[in-house]
Length: 418
Image 1 (tube, one colour):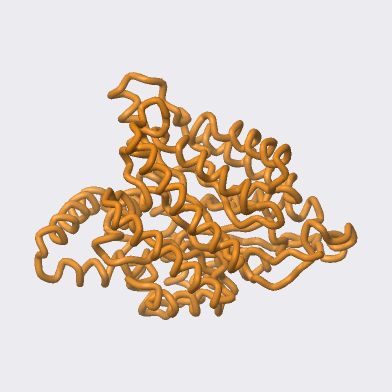
Image 2 (tube, rainbow, N blue to C red; image 1 turned 90 degrees about the horizontal axis):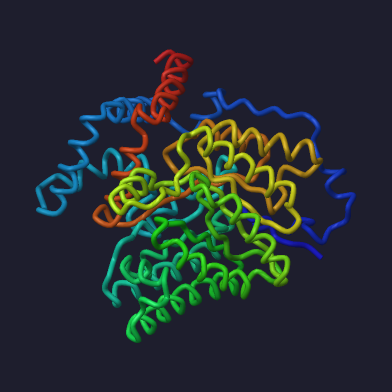
């Protein structure tokens, strides 16, 4: 029996294959070099490289980012002329694949030239009207249909906050707080998620379900676990997201794996560090409860890398995606794959990064034959503006990510003599 590779959709020997497969197809030498800028920026013309360098240099100014974010959101709200045009020509162009599914095809095809696959991510979030939630579900269903017709689009990512109100998800953390109408509303949320996962199962398209803030994550976990139990029996379709900057999520990964094995299904696990650290700490302080976020980056890195080791060592019963921009965490997974004699293209061991970021990781992994994809966010400028603001703010020099990107871009500019 065979399974399908998560990213290439071609049939390859999987967890039901012979033991000889891994030995025969393994590669003993590891050739990864994330500092190779010639490969990292091979998709960019000289002009595109200069434009990217200029944008990241502007983003390196914290005050400029804060001011630009506020003005951009206000300009869109007030319909100030040229606001949308300026955003589309700068930060939107860098971090998004287009405004519609059709727009993303050019990005999908461009990535595929370099053996990089696409994870479609409709950028809507934080809505509250029932008709809007139904429309978002329909958009996710359309994305699955689009993915099924594209061999290079194996995954659609969804946000439950696009299918349910934040208030309802927060209430559902404690079921005793739910009124009868709340229960009915939550059931509609479960049905929307089920519609998406069922369609993904029918068309063999994977569904990544994003993580959210801690005060609504338990509600999402319950939904995701029920979907995995239903649709991950024969192959992994549904993936939960584990935010390893939380102090409790490494143990939750272990417990999720044990539950999956006990209940007869396979675990889908997308590993991330996390995206809401400041909001988590601020809320914990305001409401005077212990913060669930690790006290420092070192503790987060330790848990994240332990999670990487765990999913790789249990690759036969866990299909995982290492969704990290951290070079060491990506190198660690590659080294573990080599040490265990697993083929680099095994369907259960995958990498991904956001479009517009960490091309040095994505393109170098791809050039050495690993399963790697880019998250391609799409939606109208108004729909994705909050996502774009997070990208700008998270990539300042404070995090160190932007300094790394700038250094790599400068190295390639120098190499090309520009």
